[in-house]
Length: 313
Image 1 (cartoon, rainbow, N blue to C red):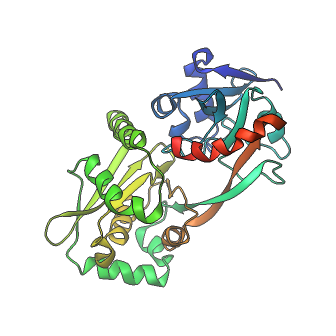
Image 2: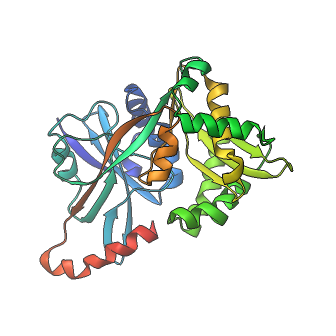
């Protein structure tokens, strides 16, 4: 097995996208070249042999320091084309050129005995292939109660709204509550991503109107052949009382039940958000975030710089 490091201009786009799609267990539209190009200022990659497997590497350069980082809106960029076998990860990570002094990478799997493990995350996956009544039976009791309350509050579904409306709902409430860390550039980037998804007919936008016909919650669901992704959502303060997000997700599940797809909630380490996802009967799946420092002894004096990198995504 030969692993090569390639800059973006050296990557064969057709071979890359074919490789990503070739292994259904890891295939993701977010690993396709068009989305990497859109959401990453720069990206390179590791490629095994003639595109038998690929690993994207979004990167930036700040103050003469090159670093690999996890972009917002591109969840879990690990290995594509085949399964990452136990003990193989060091070979891939060591193939990243030494001038990348810091590597912060979110994989799409959990690796046994991961030598670079920084944090283990969880996402929540819901099988939509069953009839709605069977899926609904798997809801936690509290979710069933909240869904009933939502239906009693005069809420209505809508899809004729702009993405910016939902982004503004998030910025005015959830961004402060959950300390999301998005920059102004991230907020400018998201509408561009939504536009491309809409052009490719790979996006559903679901919104909730309150009893006064005011948009109180909304969410974006990109999709590919096998999955819907709960990418982003926003809601106002009044939506807590009306249970608007319970209504939105329940309506989405009701509409897509019996489809041979998975709803991927994209996970969260925040306990309240994780509890919300799991309450719909979704099963947890773990995946790893890895950190690797390559600073030389003198360079460690500048290591505190990385604390700023999280804010400079």
